Image (tube, rainbow, N blue to C red; front, top):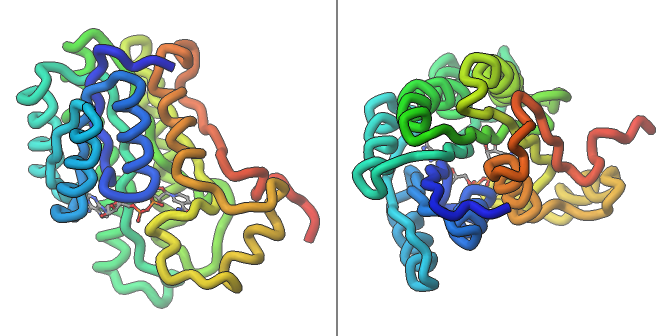
Length: 249
Ligand SMILES: NC(=O)c1ccc[n+]([C@@H]2O[C@H](COP(=O)([O-])OP(=O)(O)OC[C@H]3O[C@@H](n4cnc5c(N)ncnc54)[C@H](O)[C@@H]3O)[C@@H](O)[C@H]2O)c1
């Protein structure tokens, strides 16, 4: 799963899955543009990776904003001259059912979790094609397949991520492969404030009897991004320790 001589953009790279993926990509030999909305956290993560010898550039980006996504792609070409891999991974989410959510909260969740992927493809695909081809890996979720109470906007967005992944895989083959990873319950910033009582039902239900860690997902992303997955496109790789295969009530 080597990524030597590849340039990658990772969004949501200041924390959790994005941070682990950026680190694994650097270890696999890639040059990485690390993009995140949280400027101070991004600066500290990037300086940590640079100190250990990685080629990493920080690009403060709100993926909910069209111009900033264009700028993020430009940052890759200005820094490294090319682009081969885009990992669309950043998210934000407002909890609520359809009757509870404010329209603005619905719009923001859909902008950050779904529209950002459309904009990422729009700006990055021509550059990836000019660079000789490559791979897009979208972070979807088990929420793409099953509903969780009070997650109307997030469930809708993550369902859309899978649809857009397949659509883009068809449109941009054979030069660009497009796949999605579907994490289960992964211990990241998304679980900030969760107590042991909150976590227990997920651990009990999961056949692997633990929550996932960011590196569990990062390994799957690096695999899909690499030439080891050269005949895989349009697929959804569930990485949830079996959480969603259990049929028992
Ligand atoms: N952790 C889980 O249990 C879990 C499960 C399924 C799917 N996911 C998905 O994994 C991905 C990564 O989430 P995580 O668990 O690592 O969470 P995290 O909170 O640790 O990291 C998310 C990162 O996204 C950044 N971000 C938020 N809004 C942004 C914006 N508008 N523009 C750019 N960056 C922004 C945050 O600053 C943060 O660094 C998300 O797509 C999430 O939906 C996570």
